[in-house]
Length: 287
Image (cartoon, rainbow, N blue to C red):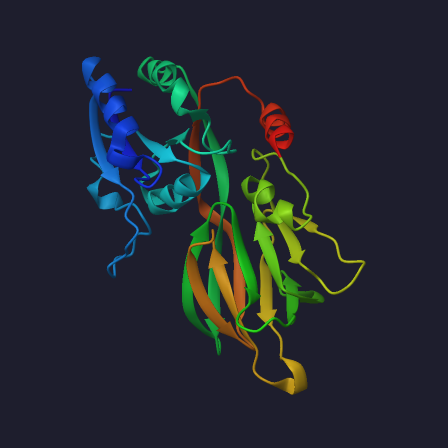
């Protein structure tokens, strides 16, 4: 690789100390490098944190400095560019950001020498409908969460698979996740851990008010629909759909969100021969 693009979470890299070291190292080796800091204000723009329009056409990969959260947002913003991402973790051990700041220089050597592999991770596409009309749509690398809004009360969720009724949950919410997202919010809600190289859709209820509710795993070609049910005494219920914890779409009783495997995917650069199982074992031992 000869041309790099850097996306930095400036909260985790104060004064861009790590970013500047990376830029200097790459330039000392005759490589080109451009920088864009994570932007926490949208100002009415369509991107979440990274303006993909600023990425030079000749960029071969994006170095994402921050953590898994930063990489998640970058993945959604650059998905149409099909640009591979390489995560550099500046916080606690993550699953997506492969290395920490103490291993940056050897990692850059691997990238400059084209010693790496690219993993493709499936994403989800979600479309929210109100009175049958499309309200909003977005994509997610980790998960799409449909949950209650406001007061601490359970919500009834009606679930359909390929337009066939599956079941109804009385719960705080429902997490629809990818294999990549299986180690995130879904895991904390009791969902299974799935290898990120797999291609399937996980449905995990969030704090369900029943003892026999478990996660369900579907083939990646299935279409999952979640409808907000009525509140107590048939009153209007309010909920939200959240895409990777970022984009929030309000929903009310009768609204539906239709979730499918996205036609787009995220490309993650891997340089280490560290298996998912080893990463998982290290992560679990730190908790």
